[in-house]
Image (tube, rainbow, N blue to C red; front, side, top):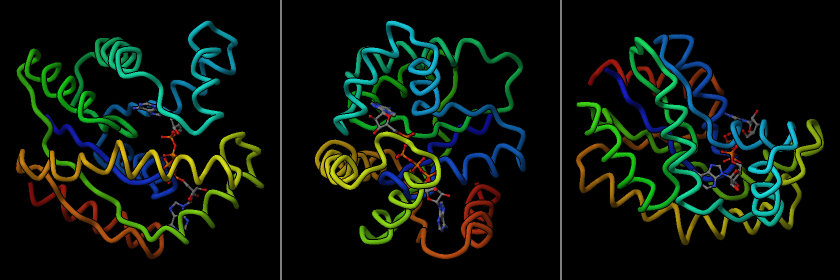
Length: 189
Ligand code: B4P
């Protein structure tokens, strides 16, 4: 089982690279951002709750996110492994993931940290906002998301180092160059 956590600040390339890893290794993919956006699009109660947080650049409460993740994970049958894209984003989520996988006799194989300078992140997300109209890709909300990343999500770097699962990748360069570096890290596991 290959269980990969793809990690990084907003706009670091998690979603982009996850799709490439899924294609190359045939893994299941959980993007918590995509799950929430689908709920918003379908106008569900969960979507309405999530929208309030996402539009403010805030994280959805841990208990809610952990329940969502468990139900998506339970839906995967005969899986070769999973790529966790955008989860965990807090220490509480990381601990919950460790427990959920342990209950299934599994563990995280590696956490890949896509490290991209802040000016580049801002530029990428503003461009995506213009192209896609994503409501949270505007300058004010991006700044808030970056603050939340530094205060609540970046501490996971040390947490995964403590678990001996951390792998740093410099996330500047073409999408192909970054995919090649990620594949090298996965193939060396
Ligand atoms: P996500 O959908 O996870 O969004 P993200 O972190 O903003 O983007 P990502 O990092 O995947 O973007 P990508 O690089 O692919 O989360 C959205 C919101 O949902 C969060 O703010 C939060 O509110 C909520 N949420 C999600 N998960 C949660 C959780 N676990 N707990 C609580 N709340 C949660 O793409 C960025 C752009 O860069 C794209 O346009 C792409 O084309 C471009 N790009 C990618 N690689 C590039 C490269 N090498 N060079 C140039 N451009 C590149």
